[in-house]
Image (cartoon, rainbow, N blue to C red; front, side):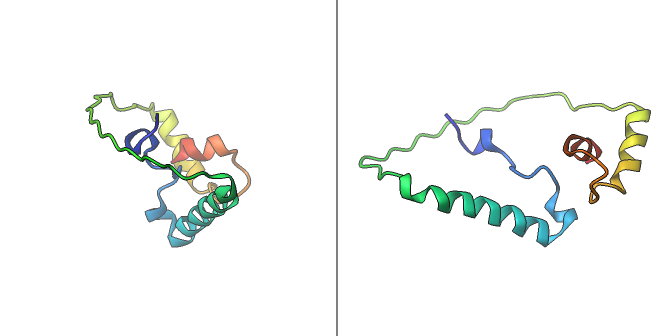
Length: 92
């Protein structure tokens, strides 16, 4: 099962910081993926909808001074090919 809560924010970057171009790029990729699959989708004859809500309390992640310093240095490189995907995510 999947819903809004479990899908969450699909963006691994803050598009408000990266700009509208980043949001459009992600949106176009998502739209193209959906469009490619439209031909194999089938109609739902008797749709149903259920809603459930839960509050999950999770501790905030903490970072050492060294990790924070590394992230600050890497922020200058996130738009380059010098960092791997995971290094970019860690910097954010």
